[in-house]
Length: 158
Ligand code: HEM
Image (cartoon, rainbow, N blue to C red; front, side, top):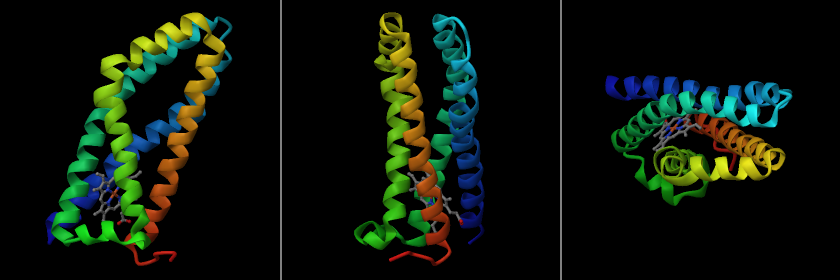
């Protein structure tokens, strides 16, 4: 029984560090970087910060996934994925999948190189796209957290 509580603690600490970091990058770092005079410096600085954050996020994403699936197994909750009132379970897996793909596959394989190339050609547009992508991911994560907090305490909305 305590293993479920323990998994929940690790799950939430991972989410706090990971999504909290996404919020910090989106709402603090990116607007500050936007004020840099040199457009090239914007991307350089942003890359340095994001690179450090990406390393940390790989660990927290992994822990969130492991503890999440452990809870699903121990709670016998697989059938929730067949029920739309548990949309927040799907949302958790979706957010996790998007970040896992970004951090473990797309970023190391080509995203980093592609962003550099685009930034060389059109720094303004590249920066705007980076900001937009962060806002979308942050909003999706917050909606998921609201649904998961309410849902796991019995408020299913529908
Ligand atoms: C593979 C991915 C994930 C799986 C399998 C998973 C699974 C779970 C499970 C089984 C629970 C407990 C539900 C219950 O007690 O009824 C839970 C709770 C929760 N999860 Fe996830 N999760 C995943 C990813 C995420 C992500 C990405 C977020 C945030 C964006 C998140 C946020 C939460 C929150 C806020 C709770 C509520 C904890 C509470 O109030 O007790 N999870 N998750």
